[in-house]
Length: 254
Image (cartoon, rainbow, N blue to C red; front, side):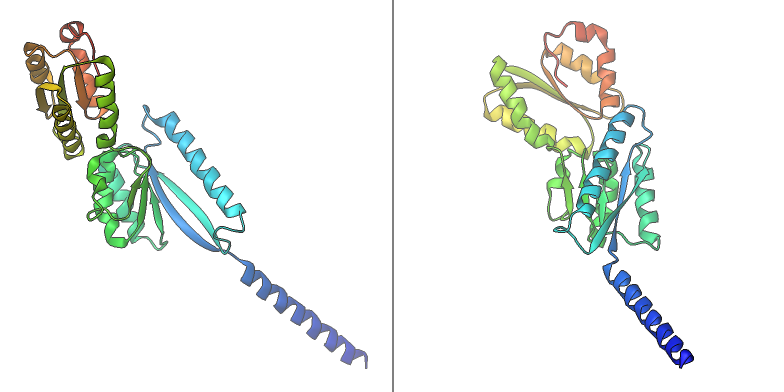
């Protein structure tokens, strides 16, 4: 009799254990992986990138803590340093695609330059991509980039603000200087078109590839005093090195 009850007790314990394991398995959330790439080690953006990483972690933590949003899933973010290099960013994306862990979305890259390498590839895997820093107008093409979203205004949208600024101060003659790059060509071209429609005289529109010294001299010879710049900050900073020209300007716009 004792052995019979002992056997029954063991069976009940085993059944309780199975129910517990089934319940635990049922309640387990399915992980949804998000890959990210930011220039975390780039010294001019390091502090800003650290703050943005904290913001992303807070957002994911808040979503995972809620029961009314993705209640059966758990978001997981893996952020990698792309070193402010578009080639490195492209390599990171390829490595992630070839890895065993699949991901549903991509946070970054931060810059338009790096995004121009990653976005054309990401579209073929139907990966939702969110950049918090890309401003190039090329990503506005929904046919080419159907899943790309940016958290910043594009250069064309910023042009509306530039026009308001020109009207506010009553400027009638301006110039445009931009880096020869698809990321900036459209913004500069659109600004010229809008300025001319508003009756503002664009006395010069210059472009350069590496060194802007010649174009700066040409702008000076044409009497440019108000200039709109389009390009990467570290490259456009070379314009400011021409002190003699800058000292002759009444206004300067970047």
